[in-house]
Length: 238
Length: 238
Image (cartoon, rainbow over all chains, first blue to last red; front, side):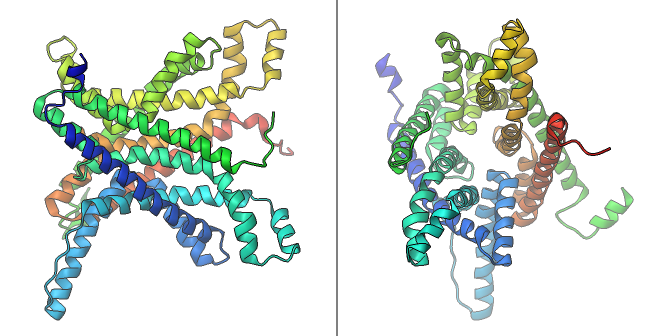
């Protein structure tokens, strides 16, 4: 029984590599999404109308269009744009160069870009949740704007943002499965190819399910730890 | 029809043929989404009541179901049901239903949205004010009457905003249907992209259709919310 379960017919290392790629992809996309999210939130809260308009368009478009369509647009469209660019450079200056869009980078860029929009909404709410009175108190103490931001705004903003960021992360983790459609060999791709060639769907997909459940479980535990850490000094209600 | 042909004259990509493919895609997407949303809601109602139960052996199985379906990507669920059904059901009388990709996809989407909807409704049920329940008990209502007349009506109202998001999420998630040979909207766009190598016209056009659908869903639910919360609106002077 045990041997049967762990006999992957030679696809074992491939599956592991796929799992590693999924984890890498999710981690890098998270970094990009956090950066874009902070920038988006800053733009949404800024006094410049142009910045607010751009941020609103960004978040509305991303949230109104399926992830997969956005991903295919960025991946296939990005390649087409690069081809046009290299044609143009060749015709104008006679320089011959060709860039092939790396699927992994395209995956990170598109997932990070998509989830940056969700993160922007989360961060915006978190910034607004910090009471004005505390910021004013900081200024009254003679802190500079930067000090107020670093000492009062950021630590509390993080506390308010953790649940939302955590949710976005869990959704993002599952969205990474879509990169298998644009040709990246993540764990889902490996499993679907293995199961098609050997006609053993459950053997290869059950480990995939367990992998995602494990990732979810670990993330939930880590998030619980984080939110406890950042809630030090906050009284719990009942 | 005439004016449409005139409008399309001289356009290589948007011809009557490709538009009819987009039309088929739209119909398939809508069929899948609407059916799975309705079936998922019907399934989620009893599940949510079970999930909100205080008896461990009633709520626990449902919690396992929702944890698995919310913790893994829809794409993986779709693959397992699509490839798994051909593995398990091939010699059974049920096979005629699963031969086509539509029923497996509908099953995967229904179970997925049922899991999310269960948790949404359960959250709303648990949030019922204790006083309302006590009042119902004091009136001598039994469990079913209480549930039917007090708990569910107010739970539906509380669940509505989150449920709107779930419906939009389902519309966007349905884009994966094209990976199992269903010609949905995304499938039509991919077909047209690969035929003409025109990523921008294919994917931006389909993104606009999805955007319109998303806004229609938001409008529809805003109307429903307006009606369902009618008793909470401030009375206007007649």
